[in-house]
Amino acid sequence: MPKLTLLDPTKTGKQAEDLENQLRHFVVGQEEAIRQIVRSYQTHMAGLSPAGRTIGNFLFLGPTGSGKTRIVEATAESLLKNPRAVIKIDCAEFQHSHEIAKLIGSPPGYLGHRETHALLSQEALNQHHTDSVQLSFVLFDEIEKASDALWNLLLGILDKATLTLGDNRKVDFSAAMVFLTSNLGAAEMSSLVSPRLGFHVPSFDGPGSNGKLSSRISDVGVAAARRKFTPEFINRLDKIVVFRSLGKVELRKIVDIELEMVQQRIQSAAATKPFLVDVTDSAREFLLVEGTDFRYGARHLKRAIERLLVQPLSNLMASGQIHRGDCIRVSHEDRSAALLFGREPEAARAWGIASRAA
Ligand SMILES: Nc1ncnc2c1ncn2[C@@H]1O[C@H](COP(=O)(O)OP(=O)(O)O)[C@@H](O)[C@H]1O
Ligand SMILES: [Mg+2]
Image 1 (cartoon, rainbow, N blue to C red):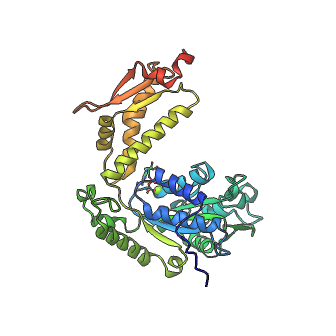
Image 2 (image 1 turned 90 degrees about the horizontal axis):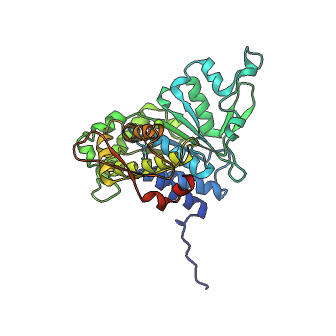
Image 3 (image 1 turned 45 degrees about the horizontal axis):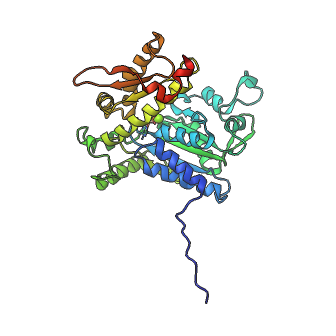
């Protein structure tokens, strides 16, 4: 009998692999969420997603500033080349029926019917499609605040991948990934990790990891979701993912990512003369210390970078102290409350723009 050729079902296609790599580049420490998104995408690309279902329905739980929104933007950025190609619905804003009309439009004949541009119309869903990628990304934030009317819409989308608009037209969600977030259980989860401990705990996948604690945190989150939401809802989800709170190791990586993004902002700001920012290790460490507040995850870090780096850079630019092609070295000296900015003499030439601009 001919021998069976063993195949490797864990190997993904090139597109899924690219998505995974890009998500890994942008999002730190949320392996499980990355895995789930890539998995759904791969199934969709293979054409094997179940009929009449969205590409994926995910409930993201976990602390604020841990990357729940970022990972959705990063998926859009990776697949549609546009991090803003996400329809975001803040559930707290749709409590009353007239607010629901903003989502689905009002029935014909209603006052203002023609003026309503339903946020969830097919056109809205398809607006960011490109020639090669026809996917949509829809994010419902803080779903525990959704009104009953909004719940019913959501259940329909999760169950049949369709939504009926006010004028009875149907919207097809079968090419959409639907993300739901909630900070439900966040308080209980963080009580398992004291703020001081939190500094060490979160590296669960890496060396010194604390897998037991992380799975306990995850269990608490999932249990909170099961208590709060109906089984009908829970059963329609593809996956509940509990985001980890970020520790120092993760925040340090995020400093590097955010600094890369600051450099990109400088490059693409039309009004500015591009220049290079060289942030030393001591300055990165200072930003990390100033930006660490476990209550707000990476949000606090981003604010520190804006305040301590971007604002001073803006001043230097506006006051004509930075020129096209400059290389600005940003460093930090012990116990100083601010960063130190200096222009490097030769680096400009190395970068190759200065001479042309002069
Ligand atoms: N895990 C992460 N990896 C990379 N950046 C992150 C991560 N978590 C948060 N950030 C940064 O902090 C910002 C706020 O995080 P966000 O995703 O909006 O938090 P939330 O979990 O509350 O939705 C993001 O825009 C991103 O810049
Ligand atoms: Mg968010």
